[in-house]
Image (cartoon, rainbow, N blue to C red; front, side, top):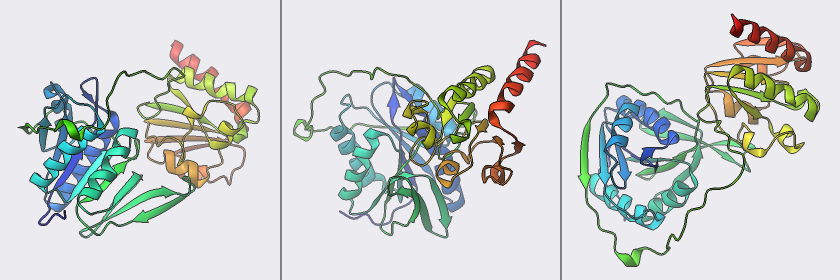
Length: 328
């Protein structure tokens, strides 16, 4: 079915342990910006039990209204049924969600239900009059492509780190309770158990400080300096695709179009030339320090501070100076 007379932005807020995930909070900030420019509102949708505390954070992130649909089923079919009914009732012009695996299963089906398109892994949103231009990675993340969905609602999933989170403590709004029954026959899957993946966990998206290393570090042994600098700065380690492919560090640390999109307060790029694929993943950082021996490296075009020199020689000096300052 097609929707007519659509207005406002609806954001599906995924939760974990009864708290909104970070990606959803980032999206709400951008949604608030777009809605205010159009004189519209942002309505957030939370699906689950006991989510009143989560709603407070969602208001702080940019929602004008929060719909809590109390539903105990966590299957994607259940959330799809609930979200579909809410879209039919409230008729949003735009539907947004974080690009988690759950949402990637959810949003395209919602789009199909309303005979519209769905953009996946959106990295940027530009308003051109009434039109939204969505920037998405294609061809395995090697190319960025601008997409315009002409039908309404415009449905999209937005990659984590694409926008900065902006929590305003005093912001609040209206909570609406909805009770939507999902028939048993709509649930096509049954969750028997939930098992957490065993492996190295690195939370690049929420880190305030990221120290990344690239091909310019030379060897796996030299890459250890990046880890030492991250440790002394109280940050986490990032890496470019070449460093990952050379197996200097696990793929979970990759920053860029085919890795994580990050926006820390401080980003230190060590031995990174600044290929477009990497820059698009960290350009949202508040402050960028670049270390590279090639003074013409593209990374210096986006850096707030550039250090021309061999990263293998510069990093030990930085570590030494930071330790001196911290000991004062």
